Image (cartoon, rainbow, N blue to C red; front, side, top):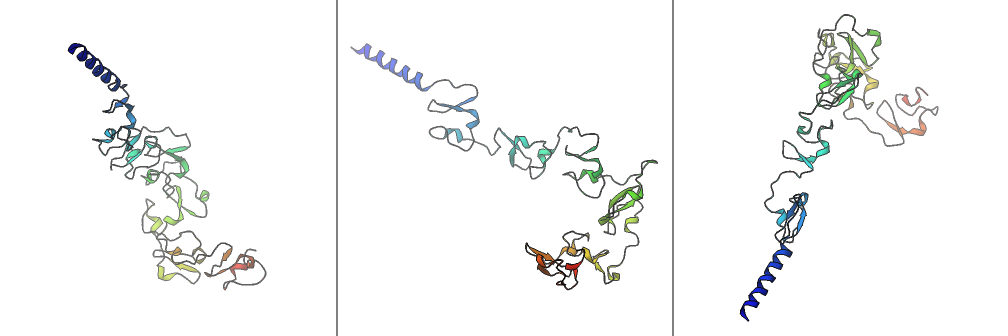
Length: 259
């Protein structure tokens, strides 16, 4: 009677092994209890195995669907080389193949594109500011812009038009340095002007919501009117209904100008 019992125990043991030790596929993780889970669920922060073995011995690295920034942060892989700095250190936009820009576009160093007219206009239009690099160059004959093509908020130098805010801002932008010549002393501004640290601007530019001084001092300590109110140039707020009603309500009469 002894041998048949041993055979039964052996068959039962083989049955247990067969039911609990199934082979997982190559793209699956094998839990100790014999179950299989998708490999991407390994170290994803969720316990999928019965006792959480799929979350053991995990490093602090990013998931398979994420890009690892040089500073250790993680961002979606789709963010790599998309022209936007998603990593705090910008490493997701380094060593990217240059995206082909159109003929009327400038290729930024980070792979993004901006309109050709934005190059060397005094403003950073590329996320990395590369459209404003190496802007001090000798303009070849026949390639100069005409002075009369500059707009009212631009000035002409080196055969091109630059933002007027670059004039008398303490930094040389023209090769000749003419943008920093004959700059008025802030102490010499007249009553119709506002004194920036480095130049005088029209008083109408004071607290108009636009920074005309290089350091933005013309927009400091400004009164902000609530919605539905008119902002007088004399730094007062009146109801919008009193604008152009034939009665002067602002101290400087600006509510009845250009009606």
